[in-house]
Image (cartoon, rainbow, N blue to C red):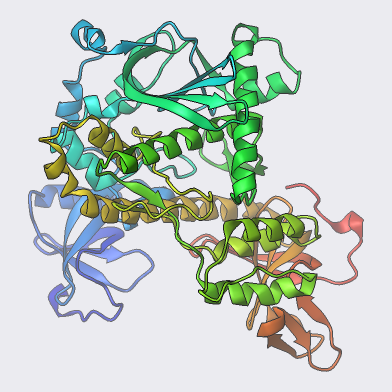
Length: 582
């Protein structure tokens, strides 16, 4: 069989990574691509015939990178376990394992800070700094400490000094640049840095000396930052807390945090002041819950819930926002080249379309003659929408009118936060731009020009890598959601219509799972899609399906390959026939 003569009928591109199994004879081997008729001839490079025969015999999945789309020739880059999440990670061009030279470099990193380095830094080991993270988190980027002062508050935000260990243009730095970010699919972590750094020397683990970058702020009684210092420091985290612990503490459900109660109460006061400042200037808080999928030890989904941010999560978020804004303003006003997290104004045309939907509720987002939109006006409308039955759905649609946040070497402001200055400073273990911001803050005058020349390329690459990570995480979530819901085929649910199209409407269940009700499956009338009304309207009976309507549906299909659920509308269903909790 001459594989080279098979034509490329499936728009396969050079550089694309595909998944399949090895087939072939003694000398001629190819990969049959999963879910496709395509067969890719294997370029034999550092892979023996014996190895290929073993993979063929054991039916091992492999990832093959296309070298020639015309001739359908590729090079095997790795094997893949049978997990569909592993396959989708590789499909996006991500290799989980670190190269040998990166592992070697990581193994040589010191396991504790040297006494010399500690002596060169401002010492903050006397402060009872706490970290607050999820229970399973191992890459602890940030610690916080707050104290009341005459006329205000002291707020210290302490971030892992990754730039001390990952030097510019080193093997570790090049790999971190290539990865751009850690990725968090539902069943694993694909870290930006090797575990020796991410979970080891860089992680702000309790009770041990750690190098950090400090952003210490003095706040007045209104919460406004009146002065600040940014500097390298050494810290020793007092306690590692979880969001659950902190939320229970503030709910009065536990007394086990009494040794850090003063710090936590001060942090709560700072949170309330900073939150008020952001709200008054127009910061938008969508409060759209994320899905959380619980897996058993075999990675099988056993529960779907919605993540609800408690006060612990909100305190940390507010402290990080304060530090990010302070560092961004510092770099701008001191003419230090840096990276910024920018979020430009929404597209006026998208907002006009959204206004048509808002008109049903008597609401409108003003657009100026210059086609500009003010965050505060956006915020006021969304606050009113939250009070309507369709509030959650409309808030989700509002998010789609927004531009995508990205990285830039120019400070363009952040619309969603209503912030004039904004950067990412607080997560250098898992985000490459934060590492670069640290590097620029510590750079000498001689180093700055050379480092600054790379900023545009880093911004572009980091934005692309972030989008890739988000896509992988979303696809993994969708996959496990469908896998879980497969156990509820033909069951009936209450749902809310969250979007309407000419081919049907999308619904969301109480647990956050959702899918399409095809218009072709609704047999009581012929339905026209009224785009201006965001509705399907029956031609003869006038029945209307529109965003925010409650409906009852039956799950009729759960497609793991497409990662999609399909539903049908059901009539005359009693409450006793419904599944209320899944």
